[in-house]
Image: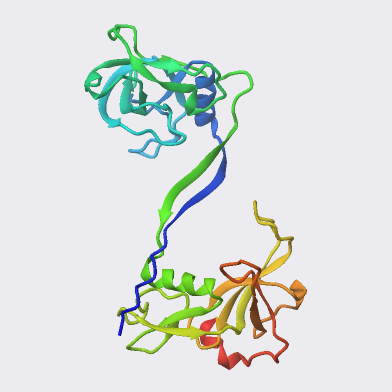
Length: 321
C-alpha cells in the first residue's frame, strides 16, 4: 500500500499592531519638550547623581525626583553593538551601531543609534554628539542619531539647573507598537486548517483520556502525551458561552453589535470560538444549537447560525463552559 504524504506544514507572515497612548508626568513632559527645543534634560537624585533619560522616582531609594538639570549634547560611548540589517521603524535605514552614550554631565547612559560607516569605526570610549532631527515634535526621535565628535569633554560640562518650563509643553504621546513575525501552526493545526478548506472539522483524540481536542494541539493538555488519531467532529455544535461585541474592529467589515461565542462541536471535548449570525444578537443564548455557514471560496466558516433544533440541556455541555 502506498503511503499517504503528510500535509504541508503551513507558514504565514503576521503583524500585530496598535497605537499606545499615554499621558506624561512633569518630568517626562519636560524631557520630551526639551528635545523639541534641542535641550537635553536629566534629573538629579538626592545623592547627587544625574539620570538621563530622567525618571520620576529614584530607582535605588524610590524617592520622588523633580530637580531637573540640563546636560550637554555631547558624550562618550560606553558600549555598543553593530546592527547590520536595520528594520522597519529603526532610526537609520543603513547599517548603524546601537550605542549607550553617557552624555557630559550625566551619570547614566542613553540608548540610541550612532551613524558610522562600519563596525571598525566604533569603539568604547569614543566621543559623540547628538544629531538633531530637522523637524522636532517632542519625541525621542527628535534625536535623529549620534555622530562622531572630535571635541573633548570641557571643564564646564557639568549639569546646570533647569526649570523644565517651555512654551506649549508636550503632555502626551502616541507610540505605535508593532510586531512582525512568521507563524507556523505545526503539524496538527496545519492538518486542521487543510481539512477546513475541504469544509471538514478535524480534531485529534488523546490515546490516554480519549478526549477529542479541536483545534488539535498535537498533544493532550491534560495528559501531556502526543495525539495523532484524527477525528472528524461537528459540523453542528452548541453555544457554551458568548459575549456581545459593541466596538467595531479596524479592517473588519462587521456591523456592531455582534456576538462572539464558544461553540462545542458535536464529538469535541474543547470549545472553539466563532461569530454567531442569522439571529438577533439579544436572542443568542447558552445551549443554542448552531451550524457553520461557508462563503464561496472560503477556507473556514464565515460564521455559525441557529439550526432550529431545541436548545441543548445544560448538563450536556457544562464541562465545556
